Length: 96
Image 1 (tube, rainbow, N blue to C red):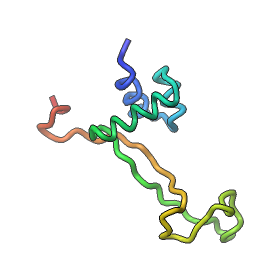
Image 2 (image 1 turned 120 degrees about the vertical axis):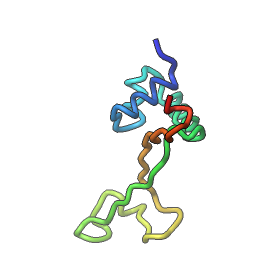
Image 3 (image 1 turned 180 degrees about the vertical axis):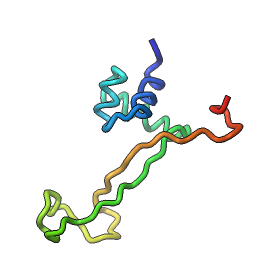
Image 4 (image 1 turned 90 degrees about the horizontal axis):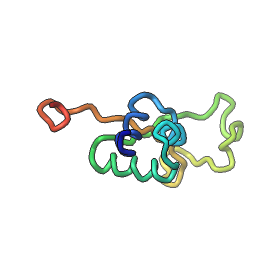
């Protein structure tokens, strides 16, 4: 049996499409997976990336987020994030 941190990292590296999926694959609770992901980000093993999405071709008001949508550049606008593994640096501790 592997430790939960390694299990969550492997789940993400193998393509888990959501935190819920990573938790299921790692056999941990959602809250535990969330805490592990935050730790892995702090350790530099994972990184957050904002995913650029645009408005639908029908314009504002035609999608499911219309009531909470804000013009581009507003800090309080919802942001879709991806969590991605960080490639090991040559000569770094993971390169052994």
